[in-house]
Structures are given as C-alpha cells and as structure tokens.
Length: 159
Image 1: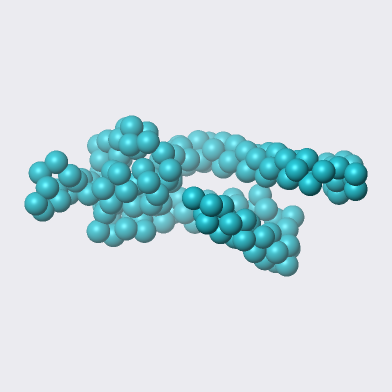
Image 2 (image 1 turned 120 degrees about the vertical axis):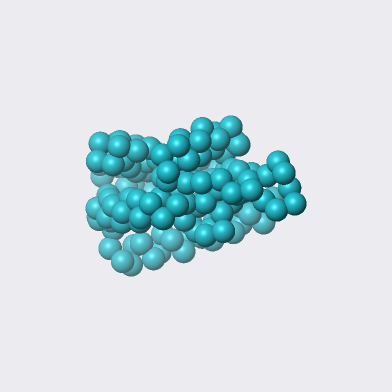
C-alpha cells in the first residue's frame, strides 16, 4: 500500500467525494477478505462460503429455521438457499422437520454431525479472520467496530 493511499482527502474535496472514497475502500477491503475466505474454504475445507453461512445461521437456531427465515437472515433469495439446504440434507448435515399445523412448511436444523462439522469450520474461520486482520491491534479493532456499528445504526434508522 502506498503512502498516498493513507493520505486524508484533500481539504478542497467535497465531503460527498470523501464519502464516496470511503465507500469504495470499504468495498475493496470487504472483497479482499471475502475472496481469501472463499479460497481457504474451498482449499482447506472443501466447502463454500454460502454453505458456511447457511450452517452458521442454523447453528444459532437449535429449533431450526424456515427457509424464508434463513433467506431473511442471510439477505439472499429462497432459491439460493434451497440448493444448499438440499445438499446439506442429502449429506446428513441438516434435516427438515415438519411444522405442526402447516403441511407446507418445514424447519431446517443441523444434525449432531452437522453441529460438529460447523463447530470445526467456525473454529477455522475465526482463526483465518484473526490472521487476515492480524495487522490491526485491539484499539484499532475497537474503534473500527464502534464506527461501523454507528454507521449501521444510522442506515437501519433510514429504513
């Protein structure tokens, strides 16, 4: 990274331009981290990031989730989730359980095998994130989290 990339925006630059530059830097950093996670998941775990995300959502819901709930939590379409859940079910990692009183609805939950597999994947994921973001000390992490939380709260209030 060059020294110029760390320079603040010129004083004559409008705030709107500085915000645009911030947005582009957030996107770039996010994409770089995501690309590395995708690469490691494929190479070291033989899985995908979307599959990990579905398992993560299910791991936090011991009673299971409806497909629409998984989609909403992950902010993707039901169609994207269906194929992943079908494969997890075929492999014995997840199972579908009928919802009493609603013949059309199912809840998806991890099997004990799925829970164990996800726990291992989550442990590796955390270690990779720690390594990837290793250049940030505790103070920098805390400041960035606080600022991003503030930004998220503002954006959610606009909805």
